[in-house]
Length: 314
Image 1 (cartoon, helix red, strand yellow):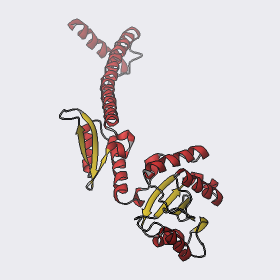
Image 2 (cartoon, rainbow, N blue to C red):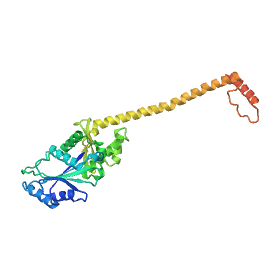
Image 3 (cartoon, helix red, strand yellow):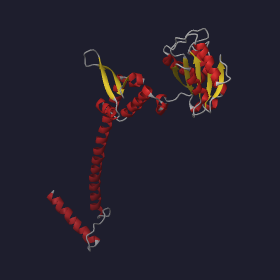
Image 4 (cartoon, rainbow, N blue to C red):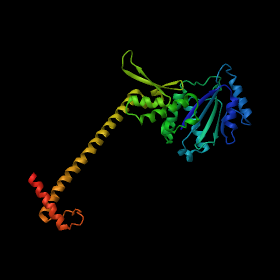
């Protein structure tokens, strides 16, 4: 379950978007006449005039669910979840519509609500992004909804502006971590992807206490992109990768020499044994060398003479 919140100045465009698509279906409404898109817009606009100075009276929320939850997402379930979400977000006692779209593989609904409530008060949007994350998590846990793999499931091609840049940096950092075992290499990999890395130092010291990433002129604190991207966590991960890499090199180096030594010793030892057996049993266990037209017996006698000479020299 993912909630995306936006605010606007005019109801006409938002209502047209939510209900104007061929596949859109109005599931429920509160405080508005649903004869047409125009009557819904007029009702929103009339109540909005109770507080004419409000700059963004339009509240718009899309609630999306994982494809894995599709069998459970009946119209009734989607409406129930949307209403509970609004209650937890403090969106109460006001006009709203809830519509379902079927233009994507995942189930999702759109909520349009009036930020001017039935009593003329403004529904607060303070910290709504943080509250949205908290509420979505609560509902997923409460109803056993699918927990996706976080940012890896976000379709960046559908994002715009700073949101798109943020997720591009997220994927670039993850990709660069997999290729790096030092800060120098890590920063170089990010630079190839148009991302600048900047460290934050404690006072005038050389102690690093944070870092940020910049892409297309937009800067984010590393920990704001993902909690696992804080300086201390990235530093620990790079050190662990470097340690593992060095250990693998040592093992590979030792391994490449040791078997050769063992092979050489075994060969020498085996050669001595074969020669001893050959001496005792007339060369039965030694393949006869190829000496052209010489027969095996002549070849064997020749071999014995060579061995005697070698022993004398020894």
